[in-house]
Length: 285
Image (cartoon, rainbow, N blue to C red; front, side, top):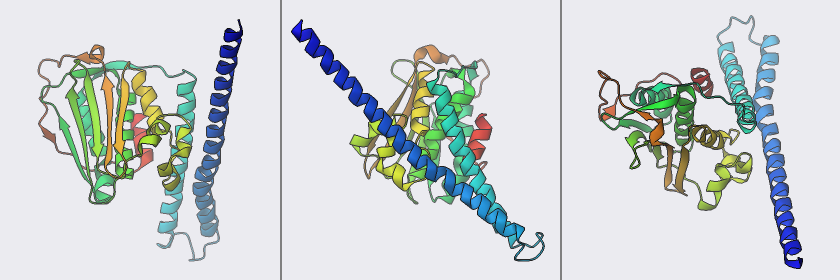
């Protein structure tokens, strides 16, 4: 009886520590979000007020173009932050429903790479997209799968210095499933921070999050989206060496390629299409 009581006390103590830790992480997250929300909002209001005073004369003057661009950029960033927070809340509430359909894996990879090609090029990065020839199709929510892949690509671009390499590849796994993998040779993540990166609100303690813009909800969101498909997110990284992030879908989520479907080339050409985070959101809405 005494042993059971002691064990119960230990369980309660452990649960209390976990709850306190979760509360601290959420508090840190909210403090960071205060900055993330106010910074673009200040830019929007500041440049709007400046333009309303017409310091360069009528608003048709070309000098105002830069201010309009800054306002637009601030709005895009603000929308991205709000969408991240709302979407993560929806996932945590279990309110996400899958709209399942046959997903052309090759087209998915090609389109995702195209959307971020210009951003990668502007950042001085080389982006390659490869698909295993004859790879099966996926059966799942095309928009959510695409969003997860875009998020991994965006992270790779964001955390890879100019001159770096990024590759995105689709292969059949040993278990018959499909793996979508993004590899970069960027700044990487320290081993002790990997778990934080995959935990909602936990990335507030990640050094990388403190030196880059964003909510830090991207990877936890991707993890949740692939888990809704019965899959998993595998994150391997080393500080200063780069990161390998893999979306793994089980064999039950694969379907044979329809007769007459195009056969993937070993390397897919990618062309510029989108350049901002809001374009990603619009494409997957």
